Image 1: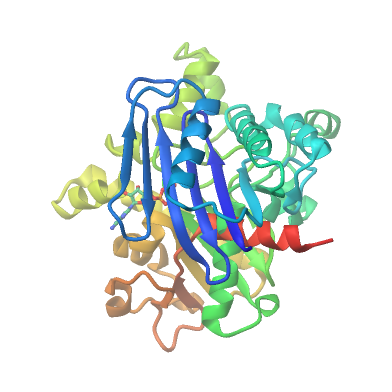
Image 2 (image 1 turned 90 degrees about the horizontal axis):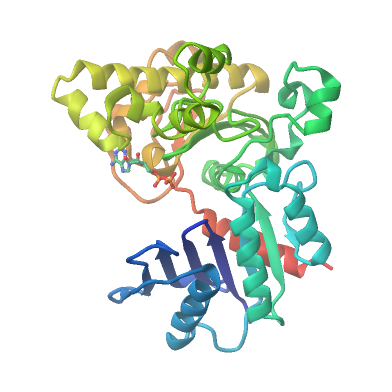
Length: 396
Ligand code: ADP
């Protein structure tokens, strides 16, 4: 019995994948969207078959999970029980530095992190509680977005705020996308044919959300997202790094409320704020057509990443490889070239032809004489959660 079900429960969606861990294949995957809204939709795919689509209003998560489990059962996807259920949990706070086998105490500890992730942890908890009731015999594991970054030293995670205040309110840098940074770090070392413990990497997860991590021998020593996922890179709709006084200025001068500023910085900024669109493909198309605004936005986007690469090379002291991943990192020839532009003197040389090659596999896009390898490594957060779930269940 080595099937693992991975659940990612959002506030209005449930994403799931069922893995056969003997050969790491996906038996079924699905997405239930628009829970609690009109036009809820469950789409489930099994193997290469046509997706099963079920429409109709689903009022809450309980009904949503009933529907998901029914779809999985009717597909024959759940015979013989599960080796484990892995839950993506966004915030593990200061408590969790590794996946945790779920019991009442772990649930209470996840609940204690709700103030740090009020939009995410409550729905993650709902998913845990409903699936615990539905599959009482299956071990359940929480896999945290923040856990991989718990190895950051204080010099990287502390903000220069009054110590007592920061301590009392748990204000520090946590970092996110940890599951993805962990996954591509391991894959990158495999691709390089070297033990993970011996390689120093800068991993760049560039999706709608985006973050960079400095990974020394498999351990994260710094990352660009901080107390929340708002810090760091320019993202699809998030501003990334800002002078914090801008927040005060927007409040005092533009008379925006705190909620309005929250919305502005998280959903109306980044590439959307700079260009009007957040899809990188559209931005690239416009830039290629000579749109100066789109070109400048691309420059801002790549330059911010390049600065982090420089900072993290300094933090690591020695850099073996740059790793691009997620939607933009895996697909954008322009962004990879733009990030590495001007870094030749630091030993980072992208090979134009290799960079243009399309593939779903891990690959090297640097030249033979590049002293730092530049890699594209597809991420797979669900598989990583399944791997970590299986490893956690197998531990005594
Ligand atoms: P999420 O963070 O939502 O998981 P993804 O990792 O799927 O996001 O990344 C989404 C982003 O990837 C979008 O901005 C999309 O424009 C970008 N993207 C996907 N394909 C390409 C491509 N061929 N060229 C440039 N950007 C791409």
